[in-house]
Image (cartoon, rainbow, N blue to C red; front, side, top):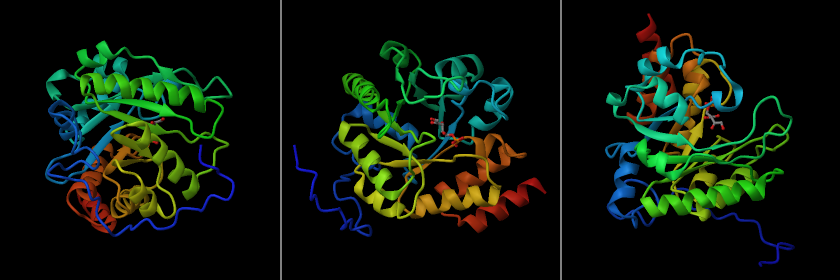
Length: 292
Ligand code: 5RP
């Protein structure tokens, strides 16, 4: 093992140099994969823009019916057509999303804790790969707690998903968890995102941070940025804009869409910023035009 004492800190990220091993495929780090993996990734990442708008509505798996997601059956079908990919649990998707929508699914496949516990840092892969295949999942989403108590077990579960994913050409999306005591520094996200990529995931879901372009440059697979707590629509569009400018391949946004007073309009504005090169200001003007 490398001696970590006296290890030189990474500093030369060549942020302005494009990823070198893209070949003819639009998803970073995936040019060497087979047809099935590329087909699923192309359902998530639009081949024209190379980007994705994921709609995250998996909150109920540990929080119950949070604000905005009281009725999955009413809300999600209204938003689904504006998303490239739906991130949810098998229970939410099977019960409330018509299969005729034919959307890419990032299937929440890890679980194990709830808001009734103090420690949320332990999750295991709870969805069988057979069921993910039955649901035609485009990716398996597994939460990983780097730097928290559950680190070892969640890394093992992530690797289990990666192994099964390779067996059936289903991408794995490693989800960087940020527990309440965990720091949100550039150093932390550099470490966590790179670790997940090196475990073999095809997508990393993470949070925006200072020097995000360094985090994106150092991670050889696409980053999708979580929305986090509800903020003003203008600020959420700035978050999406900064993420894309910083090298993210999309957003995986939940509360900033479904807790907006205008969720259908908000997801469309996010799509403009992610796919069509709108600035945050243009995205917000578009949003205002839609709601007025
Ligand atoms: C939790 C998740 C959520 O999907 C994620 O937090 C995205 O939702 P939001 O934009 O509301 O933060 O992965 O582990």
